[in-house]
Length: 143
Image (cartoon, rainbow, N blue to C red; front, side, top):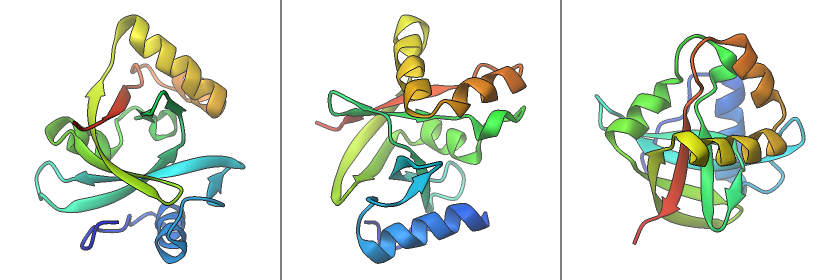
């Protein structure tokens, strides 16, 4: 997907990414039997490309990217990367494309949040564990 992107230092995340890269597809790579996509972000400070596997939440050709970090008090590191550099690469199955991320609020956030919880119910538990409002990004195809 991206030649020099860096793998996560977190073992299970790195293993997921390596499996996707080896097989050339996200098919068969899951979390709790739920499908994922692979997003490549650009570091806010380093400028380095980084792989981020996230739950597959697709609607109308766009995807959600949920900054849950399991309900911890802080955002995941990739959150800051996407805010600083909203153009990302997405791999869904064997299909890849360039997308632009935007953080959503209000009714639009609620719609995407509901879709995301339907796709991966633990998101609701993560929100209960933290006082922060978990950010929701929508990834839309770049024009």
